[in-house]
Amino acid sequence: MSILRNRTFLILLFLVNFFGTVYGYIWYENQLMETPWYFLIFVPDSPTASLFFTIVIGFYIFRKRFPLMEALAAVTLIKYGLWAVIMNLAAGAAGDPLNILHWMLVVSHAGMAVQALLFMPYYRIKNWHLVLVAIWTIHNDFIDYIYNMYPWVSLNLSAYINEIGYFTFWLSIASLFTVWHFNRKYNASFDTEINSFDTNK
Image (cartoon, rainbow, N blue to C red):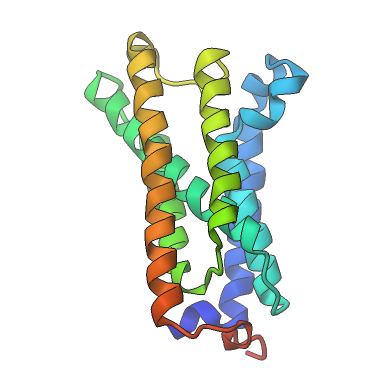
């Protein structure tokens, strides 16, 4: 998709993700105020994922690559994008009335996963990058569900937090596998070098 290589589009995408990241950290403000300082980095999952992607897009704008950050962004965007969609829909199924804010969260987090997949042909991720990302991601799951640092969920879902933790672990595995699979596919079939990003438009 040529639009993904257009500089104007990349700048707009950078801005959308930047402001979305800022909004996301604000969203977590109350939970962060109650979080011990040594766990702070593990709590705001979705805005940290969009921060990773914002950095990746910033590098693309200047015709550079940061493959480890690409791996972090791709895996966490897919994981937390899908996680938030499923948790909001599950809250609705459990009895929460879904208002416009819930649907905004569903659409914006679905967009996180979609943009990770759209840029898959342009990533240059190596296996060792994914090993490091796997350590980060699964360690984050342990922090969330062993030390109860997981993002706040609906009260109607609180009785199922063990099941949510189990689901989240396997979502991490599925996200890692998805990125590994498509990265191998596109690296084998695409010659998408850095100069393919048309930063003159």
